[in-house]
Length: 485
Image (cartoon, rainbow, N blue to C red; front, side, top):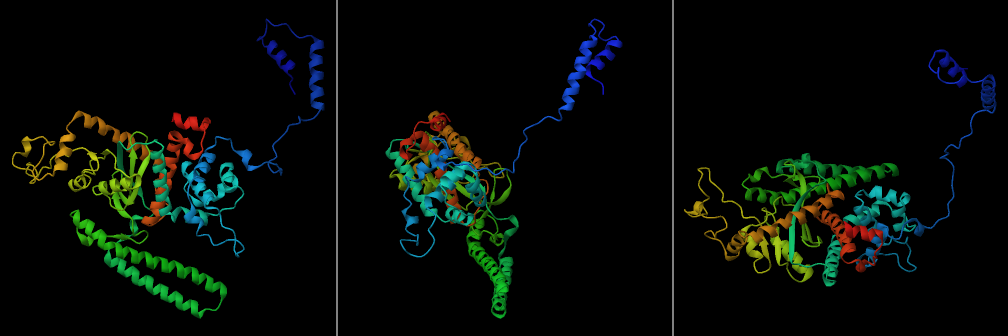
């Protein structure tokens, strides 16, 4: 083995270190002795990781989270909400037989926190409730399963609506929000249905006949076969067949509505198709220009505070008929309508503007006059329409529509309208960042319940900034960070 001294000697012989003094014989012997002692001591001792070692740690859940952790914010909001409608349905009372039910506040808090963290899977939330400190803190030792979690998320549309009303009413009573200006926008969210599940009348009738025959066959086999294991398997097959049969029936019920919508849009009613997976879903044009099964999620948001004061989910691909219902909804929640209502060009149908006249002032872009194939203006304009400004009243315009046209001609109105995108698009982007990309449930009612969770999660973060006292939230680092954001 060549030592460093020997190596240096070789290099010195090669003339590389001519300017350096040569080591003495004593130094060489000393270095060789030191190296020999190291080799005789054996290999180095190192502390290596042992991840199979079992550890016992004594700690309480309360000490796992900082005082300004987001999970505490969520729980502080939940404990202030009225969940009596859920508690009243619990059957395990007093000495009555039965297992104690999971506190609805735990399920609600888990989903709110999961929504804020962008988590949308019930199975994943159930797993995190066993492994993640924040979820474990919310559970407080209570075991939850994904069935209970999914049932809570999908089956409380009325509760979500009531909590949204209570939330915005409390913010308004505290002076945290004003209804001077509200922006409304629609967002297409992918439905939990495949494009191939949409079928026409003839195909649906055939599938319904096959499904009905399968149900009858499985019922007959269940009566004949006495084996327990076999009966259990047949029962599962029968439930699946009955569910499919019911979905096909629901799709057939939706066909007339789809056909009527196609007829209004100038398409053939015979081309109407409904999904056998989610009968409430409709094929819509998405933001990327493609067409996919989706739902139309509507948000109405205050421009100054960015608090959602109105929410709805419809299965119409157009926003044209959504203005008036949302104004009425906000008026019902807060007792009055906003002073100004900002929408994009897809909303201001003349009938909708007339419906909200006297309630609010609509700010929306005035469309350009439609041109016919021969290059002339649309027939609804008079002969001199091409020489008129689009903001001038047109023949047949109601007073409300004429006022809207004139209003949008001013520079002030154009400056006000700029707030629409800054408000509505921001809220939509935050919802998508939290996972509102594809619906995890099927059916309009369940979809509304899921969207309600996103709305409450959004408003919770705004409440922490605008009126933290409503949820018992202080001025810790997290609250300060929320305000800075």
